[in-house]
Length: 331
Image (cartoon, rainbow, N blue to C red; front, side):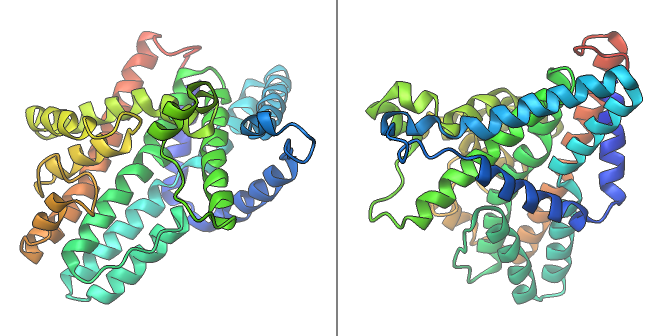
């Protein structure tokens, strides 16, 4: 049942307009903010790092209750709820359209339109507005951001939707992701003079507090999907090169799934070695000196690589469902 709901959601998401769920996402964002509890204002500043759990618990309990009621009424109704929740999280069509159009603009020599398209896409996701002067920089930033979006808006959703019976794993992951974005937005709105501490710094300062932060929960939930995705990239490209790139980048960051995964994608599309997991690195700068034709080809290869990995995951999930290895899988 889980795989069938997943397949229906993937097919529907391919044909439905991307803006169909925009209002729903905006409403959920406003609703989650209403559910937030300001523990500092309530006189419990020592537990302020746990206030993000309130919206998550309400959504998890609410969706679980609704799913059970619909299941009693009809398994088809509960499956429809699962499809809706999956459609809410999936953004693969938006991802494919942006990369396809950017590649077409670059092929036509229209760097400025490609840059405008990708800058809007990046800002929508994490609020970043990198300074980009050359097509090479644009390609590197596109792959850098595209890797995380592919993981968080597609592959991790696959993993948790199929691993946990019903849509509960998906709901927990979506709420953890929302909490990370909300924490970042609050930090930026308060305009702190010092930089936001990294996960490594937070862990060294107070590991117990860091372990209950949304960033660590999201890191833990993406730990296995990121490695499975990197393995898939290696299998459809060069496994040895992918393994070397992962190890090289992983040594730089203990609490990052994005850095080594990005290095694997950079290596797979033939830009640079595993050191260029960050567009600001020297290795990335050296890679930007490649010819424009090679850079455009890398953008196309990255889009095709993500698509191939998605097909592999769907086929493997189908095999698991047929063998009955998925939780509650009756196809």
